[in-house]
Length: 220
Image (tube, rainbow, N blue to C red; front, side, top):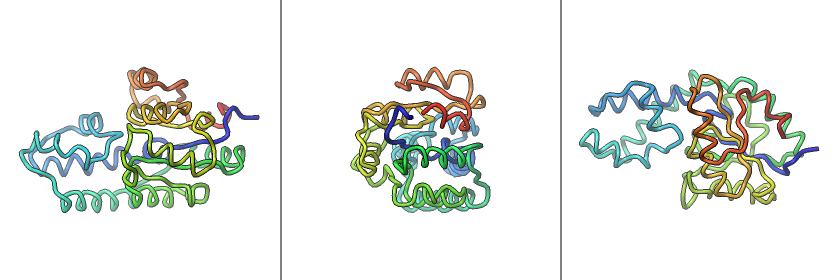
C-alpha cells in the first residue's frame, strides 16, 4: 500500500550525479569570460537554475552578454563531459524500478534542464526504460522552476492529481516548484550536500528529508 498515486522525479542530483560535471564546465567557461569562481562557488550560485536564465547575472560579473552561440557552446561541452563521465546516483536505478512497479508505471521525470540533456542522462545511466514518453523539460514550459509548470504537466500526463503525487527534489528551486504544484515533496540530501542543505529544503517546503536513494521506495 502506498500513500501516493504518482511519483515525479527531478533529474540532476536526484537520478544522475551530474552537478559536479556540469558546473566544472560552466566554471571553466565563466573563467574564460573573466569571472573566476571555485567549483563550490559555481555550484552554490547555479545548481537548480538554467544557465540561460542567469544571463543578467553573468553579464554583471563579466561585462559580456552571453548569446545563443555561447549557450550552444556550453551545452556542447557539457554534453561531451556528461557522455564521458556521468553515473547514476547510487541506488537510483533500483529505486526507480521498484517505484515504477509499486505505482504501476505512474512516474515521470520533470527537469528544469533542456530535453536533450535529460534524455542523454537517463539513457546513459540505464533509466530510460522507466521514463520513456514521460519526460518533461522546463525549457518547454511557459515558466521553468521554481514555477510549478513542469510538475503540473507531468502530473497531468500520468493522470494523477498533483495532490496525490510525491515529488523528489534536491534543490530549493525544485522543492519550491513541487510545493507550488500542490504535491508532497521529499527532499533528497546526501550527507556530502552539507550540513545546511536539509534545513534549506525544509524551509522551502519539503515534508521529509532522506539521505540515500535506496531508502525511497519504503518511504512511499
